[in-house]
Length: 371
Image (tube, rainbow, N blue to C red; front, side, top):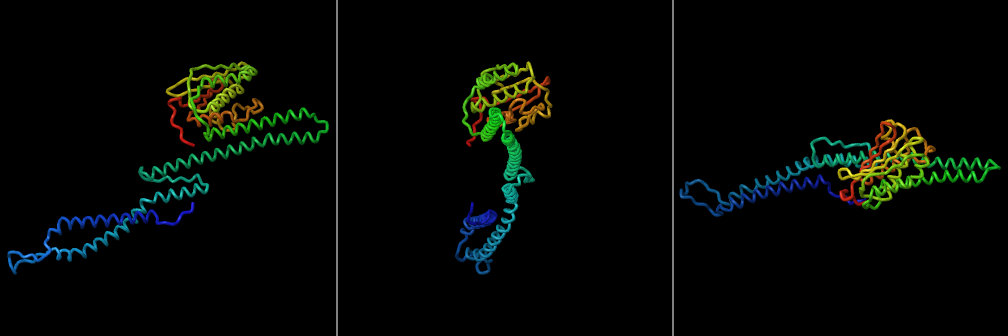
């Protein structure tokens, strides 16, 4: 925004200091006049001693002697106020120069710079620390977005490349089977659509742009389990749901997607035969808690925290194993964070994964900031 030039804050503070000193000096002189000089007679003062008595100055004599010194004192206060005020204002505003420099660097794209203002805690250092925290969060978010964009572009490019390869092969084959070609293209196209919808859902959850209302988490869990029951039966996975009636504040659609992703993940990453997936809901210390626990392969504890990253998959599985797009747990994490919740992933000792989602319970949820 273009602004007209004006006096600097340092100059204004300097003039304020100088004006304060002049006003204070004038008030002191006014006190001297009001409480001392005005009681001195203005005419000749005659003492009882006659002509040989000592000289006694009157008000006019005192004013003639006092006036020049008052002018010099005010001039000295003015100079002291300007010089001292300029120095003090510079010392006080020095942290703002570092803040301004850091802001300009951040605006230019350098998010790695930190102010790290030394000294004891005060308003400037509190502002500098908050600015450093903001830069750290922005740097982490930008890095995550860049990594996500790179992975997403790679994942989206894959079905397009497969489609082009199928079409090239079909052109070179005069005896091609049209039905088989259409079936393959339909599979690739469905995969691309699923990936695009998952990316849009993840973006929506990250923005937090959804209406919030009380949602019965137990009913959401039952709905998700009922939807995925055919998939569980086809893979011979025992799907169980139980727990208490507990309400959270948020979006029914997003919370349903959260539970669906967790249950789907538990089914497709389960044992080849005879595995189980258990879904529980309960209230704990004013929080609505959802747990999804599944059997399966043993997971490396160091690998588990990375499963919520986009396009990360555990256990050496590929998309061909379960038809996923690698965004299930990333979407779960984003939806949980958008609802001010906490997501915890723990490997089970016997194999498999235990996922816990803790959300603010309805009636105890914090106020949501306007977006």
